[in-house]
Length: 371
Image 1 (spheres, rainbow, N blue to C red):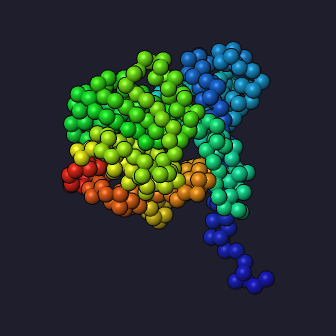
Image 2 (image 1 turned 60 degrees about the vertical axis):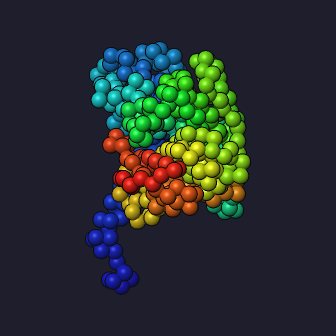
Image 3 (image 1 turned 135 degrees about the vertical axis):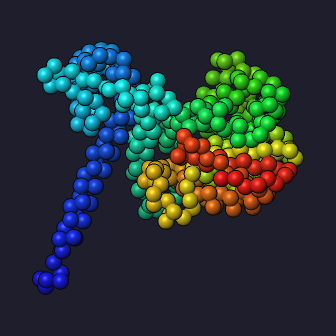
């Protein structure tokens, strides 16, 4: 072999560094799955309430099988999540870590988002088939998706709704208190609408979604809370531009929903059509650029492109749709909103939320753009 073909010290260092990166990926990916299990089983909640305890005590507190708890604790200790004292055989979840891992930590509970890893892994074989044959994976193959999304939105939307999101539209809170008609497009399990319906009893709320199972959960919650000013309807929004009631709603919201649609442009056109002349459209969607090169430093880039590949893009393609994907980006969102008839688009970002943009559009008047 010629000297020119031999790897240089720089090449060897780069290879070793990348090998370390891949090992870290394997460990952190595995840890994400275990963090999801810790959330779903309540183990983090139990640990946060216990003094340093052995695996038997932790299992008893959690109502779980000790052998599984002990093995899970092994992953937590080696992953730097739980502390372990070998002299006493006791485990401890420090308070500064429980502040990011327990249900009491909402809206800062990062364990909620770890659930996406296991969920998306369930459809890996189907997605691999789509790589080979095209098409997509339909919603029905994601049995826990709406459950996880409800928890996700409970942190990113519900927790910020009153203090941060509604004030993005001047006067909206007062209008809701007086009584207006509101439509939520892609409402899922309806947590945002249920909250609004309880807070603003003079307003009328309607939620549209494709998933009947998610809507049924929403209806059950509405009945349990005796809310009579909210209704949930199952709709395929592919033809929403033709089916939408004309000038029917004062406010339309879409929380992390437009990019999943089979026909997102038609949905946006339907929203424009169903708004009253003085109506407002409030849309939350992923904060990103439509250009890959602008997302290189995105703090959630790999996760969001993965969620797009494994869910958002493929469920749209399964319906023969546009397949926008999670990372459709602000530039394309502005273009599509303008083509739908929203001539002025305000884009807001919240200081505590690195994941989302909040778009505000007023049907009847142009307003200066803000960032």
